[in-house]
Length: 76
Image (cartoon, rainbow, N blue to C red):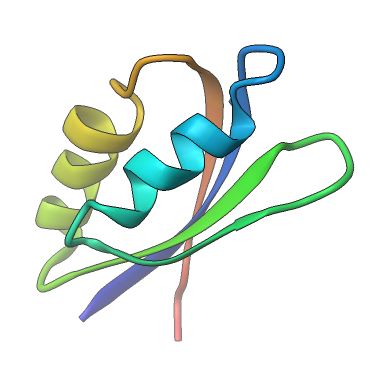
């Protein structure tokens, strides 16, 4: 199982809209609004690292109103 935490910046005032979209994605196991440099954090799981990369690239980063992401892949 491959796991990553994704830090997400959204367009201004779009945090809750993007959060609801994230929660509907099957690969997203958790998603939360956060304070600080980033607007949201999401925990993503996939069977393989390749699937994880594809999920992040094709599903999360391409969501409308997502401005930027930082992916942190878990190593344990």
